[in-house]
Length: 295
Image 1: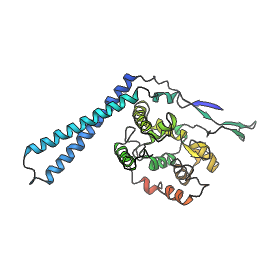
Image 2: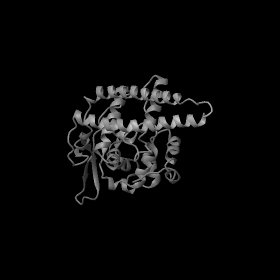
Image 3: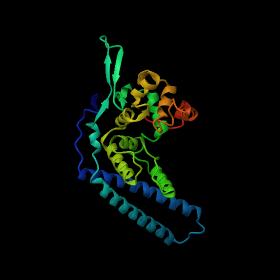
Image 4: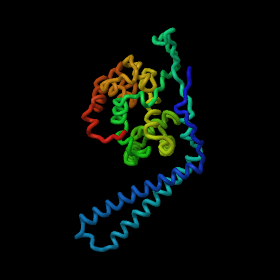
């Protein structure tokens, strides 16, 4: 089995001090975001109830209450971060992480593949330039439409998923960005545990500080499982369409992008082909025109 690193660049190892710096930057971002949201709510409540709210003291009480609420949330988040961050792996390790690839044996001309030897994972890594735009578009449309806008996580999705977990009294999957999915598959496990989700969030924020969006998308598309032991877009293209990823059409790219969410359930060889078709149709050009993706 051949092994190949994702990137040749040598990124410095993390330490706890660097992790704290990243956390401070993130908290600053959250503070600005929260302040804008709070002021928007207060302003809308004042303008819609001018006749009811005449005393300036009510506004001050609302502002003070919002501040205490934010401070309580900040202390809770800081405590959770400090508890989990000290033992986390470095996201920089993905640059030096070796991933198993299939070994290919060709004839003497080097043009005809005779055998392909692989373990549990059938994988062939390719560069970002070899991945067609239709694959990138399809993946982002289905998995993370705000990929090129967020900083590793989406607060609204996390809050929404957390509320569902509280109501169901269970830690469910969902609300994960492409960055979070890559972290889960490369550095963590798939266990349904709150601690794993917290670690995933922390590492996703850090990963976005170290790598560009294109690099993260490249790693993701070389990492994720598509079913039938195919890992990565190149192996998936070979497994399901007997062609290279760069040769995929829009329909084929849309089908493959539909699989990672539930490879067994959506398998084109399985019993849920109608569900797969509906998911595939979400990625057609009409959908592309409705969202703003910047490459």
